[in-house]
Structure formats: C-alpha cells, structure tokens
Length: 94
Image (cartoon, rainbow, N blue to C red):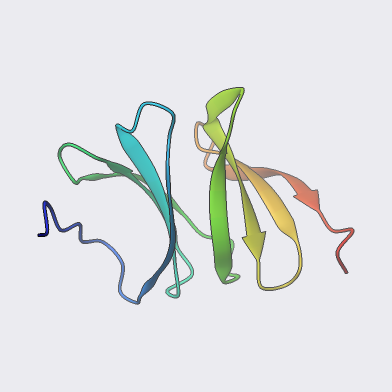
C-alpha cells in the first residue's frame, strides 16, 4: 500500500535517489526540473534546472550539497545546491 504521495513536478518523474540517511531524496522529471525533497514532510527544499532534460541524479558521496546528473544532451553536470548552480560539466560523451 502507498505510504505517502509527494507532489511537485508538472510532468512524470524519471528518477529518484535517496541520500545516505534517507531523510532527503532527489527527483528528476520530464518537466526538466531536479528537486530535493524532505522525506518526512514532503516539502521541496531545493529545485534547479539547466533547461535540459535530466535523466538521473546521484548525490556526491563526499558532500550531499552536491550531486551529479546525466542529461539528454550527453553532458553530465555537477550541481552545488548551496550556490544553486552547475559547478562542473563533463562533456566527454559527445
């Protein structure tokens, strides 16, 4: 049975990734937004978009303020949520 429903995207959710403690999770969506949720309250804590469809997002193991995300344009990007910006692009997949 369903324990909880989370709202926040205008299109379907593509991927979900929990942090180590399970108290937060990242979602990527077909609406091109990446969102960070508080697992307990269901509130969106952070959101960001590069304007490109994100495929998945994974927390950086050394710092949960950062995550990496693969995108439809064949570029992986590293976000820092503290500054709400992409801090690194990995484009060797082109």
